[in-house]
Length: 241
Image 1 (cartoon, rainbow, N blue to C red):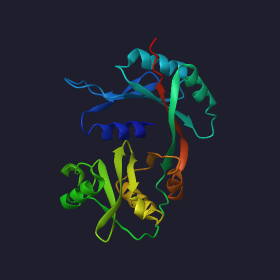
Image 2 (cartoon, rainbow, N blue to C red):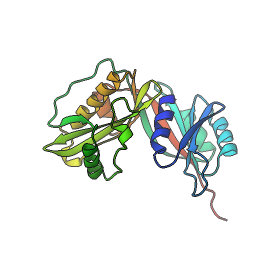
Image 3 (cartoon, helix red, strand yellow):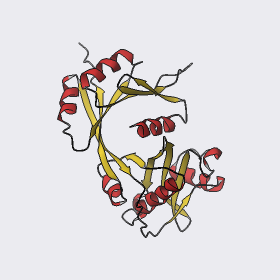
Image 4 (cartoon, helix red, strand yellow):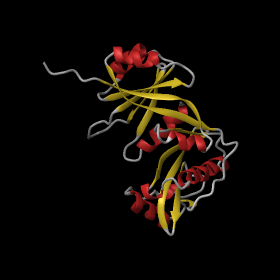
């Protein structure tokens, strides 16, 4: 769970520091103090804590808007989590498989794309244009930087990307995407395996991620195993009288 906490707060800190704090048996992830502007929604992350305890802590300590991320380990029944939060007035927004790769055996799939780590300003600018995002900061272009970005290229076109964020002693896999016209060609798997090789070379002991249910199959085919499921709940707003 610490890898998720560290990786998630790292990526949300690009625009304003987003911090993790342990509050009893749960973590709260939220903005550092702001001098102006609204606070973003908080995430209260719980593993092996009862819905009643998490609800009590979150309602008492929140600054305003928040969601609860309750993790159910693989092999355990999720009924207590589902029913417990529902009884407390929460709405289940979605579930996401929580997965890990031990980096011991990394596949070497064939792909029509070449896989590259983004290590130059030129490639970072091309990625920004392709993805519609801000260019990668110069500090993240170096080998060993806490964020490593990878791209898939076909005929000089960037057709996919993924990044790994150094979190604790592992990598947090994030922002995996392949353009629709290039899917089902093994490009996503090749991207992942390139990233995993980079993680292992950098000394990571594992790669951890949250997947969509449709994307989970891709990760399984790349060697990831399911650790559990994250349940994302939000409090139901009271209806106006």
